[in-house]
Length: 506
Image (tube, one colour):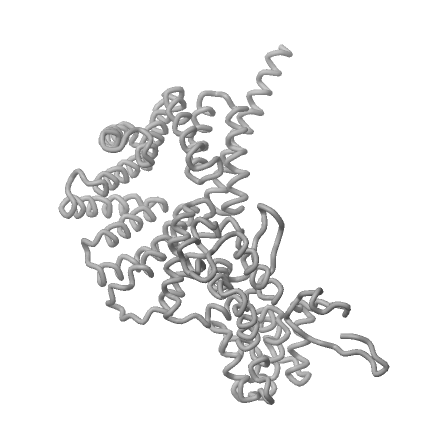
């Protein structure tokens, strides 16, 4: 900390606050990467390089303490773990098992600080003494940012967090208290800040995230349920984020809740699974969506009953997943069976009944039976308008589908007028980059392309392609479809320009 005739004092700490240590020089040590991580593991394993060392070092994320513990376990428990791969298999589902194996090897009065969970618990205690909101906030980040994913601050809006587990009676949640809590977590090395201003995001090391989740108990279930509600409010704006967070929430709820397989208290777990499956469908991945909904329908039928509204909705999404895969006979059969059930249980005029009739019309669209589809869609549209008016979301869905069918039947200008109206409403209410807004823009581009205005269509398809690359990701079905649309219209534009040039030369 300061020089003396006897030399220097070296202090190791997780507290990254230069002001606290001044005038000492601060050297920051991060995670180890690649061969450095493997070398550290091998050093602690007694100098031998057991098979699977690369994979184990990668699984431990290069955290020196974890590498040290793993190496010592390999050196001490050679019979139980003859190589690194066997230890990797032992901790694959729960890295906290390292602590259980390492506890007998820890010596002295600082045992807690020699274990992964102990180091983080010490840091958390130091933070939470002055910032009680730190623990629930860190748990939220450990779920939303599992596997080292950065969590944009936009995913933690103050107006949605107020009134929940972060809003304590002793310290009301506001911008200042949230900033103080985040700063404390950063100083103690638990959270990293990425970016600045409106683009700021928070990141936990994957091993820290996993360790925080492994320390959660049944008492944290209200916070887990609150996270699901927070995701509900964020809708479809970032589907990749929704899929990752929903998957983590569903697994965490199943682990923490002390229920039997028949317990009706599984509804929050079911809800997270349903929303995960729905996000998979929206992002263009119906195959895993079908697998998820097949199990969910079976579980919900057993626990909640065949005619429970949740079960019926899960059946609806299962049929939808089949339709998106082109399994039209299976989808139509399921939708017709579902129509009979909901009509009997809820009545012919119920919203759920109308929704199933709409999906049956979509099956006709997929079969390209345009006249039949238009007749069914018009009936649904008239019923929805009479009930909800012309700007309600389900009415807009129906109007856009009707417009698409009109384009397919050669009425491009008619379809275009409707699609422009729907697009304007979606853009103003949901935003220009929302998935539903983009879907309408894509159909509008098709209408414009059909009308022969290729340059205008090219701009629209390019916009859809660019936003989907950013928010959905390259290589996923919806992005690939947008790229194919763009290639097709660019080829048509090139042919049109070449033809026009040839005419001028002639």
